[in-house]
Length: 217
Image 1 (tube, rainbow, N blue to C red):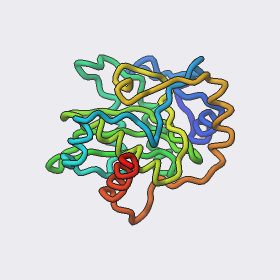
Image 2 (image 1 turned 30 degrees about the vertical axis):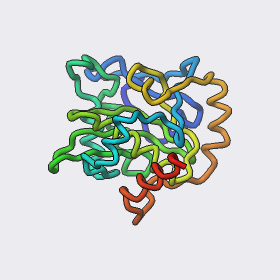
Image 3 (image 1 turned 90 degrees about the vertical axis):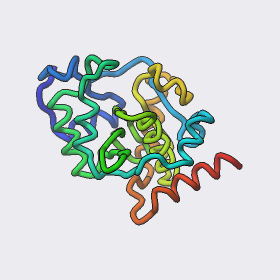
């Protein structure tokens, strides 16, 4: 059990294929986990329902990156009616905020009338993006954040989108599993590759349009 950890140790853990989780947001302790199977999503071929695709094209939310990382992770740590507990405690929250300011942890945000209504965050190492958590307070906001994430990862030359585990929510996007050993072998090469999450001066709407146009070909 751990109560505090440095960004360097977190980065080393992810490079080995393990990750931290707390039993609850209220706990001061957390541990590192190495599941037998690893959840994965296809960056270029994530499943998008016709309903969600229509909504994406209507641009219901203003989507940004890295503008409200602390707000996003705090929302992800909150208990809700459908999520009575979370694994993001204060030590995990604080180390990921440090990783964000070091340029390793990133967020995608959805805004409605200048209010943050959905988003997600994760850790990027090389061409691997490790998705951590997402939240939504308006219809489909987290789903739209996820598709924007995939568009950005595709544009930025990422090759792996890890979700750690599978869950019912991610099944609609075509989540699949690979053995942990295969994942560990995969990231040895992919984490050495160069990728660009920020894509400075590239318009978010343009990234999404190019992504959807490629999928339609």
